[in-house]
Image (cartoon, rainbow, N blue to C red):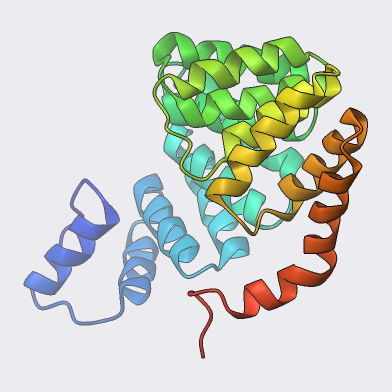
Length: 252
């Protein structure tokens, strides 16, 4: 039998194959767990495999067994991801918080905690995690845009714009998502032309962005540009079904 090797699940399975272990990896791991039921790494490896196969309840169970034997950042992160996939957002947040406590310098733990807490509107917790993350790595542009969205939810529109502008220093915003967030902030600040311009950028990058086109129509209404607003709404009502059916990614 193959002795347990430290390292990734990929390394484990590759060594098993090289040594003639042709049984399915799940069965191999289960047999090893039966032989060494107090080994937390084995439960963690099997939890990883369950996650890969989307057996999320089983992933939670094995990650929990690993945690009971030896709490680790990786086990809490894995269980958090499985709980998130199961829609248990409060549990996922708790797991990410434990991971961040065990490994305060972990970018991934702080990022997942910040984004989950923001999603749940646990703003104080989210702000602390974002601050810890950016202290470690200020160049995390995805999380900067996530914090901008959080600031909008908090009514802090100027702060949201600040984070978007910081993001755009290193992110070309090829999909237009950051400009869409900026559009929302400008609109809520009453800066309707800037909002329309930001939404126009998003639409130029993604012509199927329904939210951006609808929001631009609202900005045009505020500016008194009723014909432009009508044009956007007409395209939403009449043109999108045809445009989508003719899009290059649609199968013929």
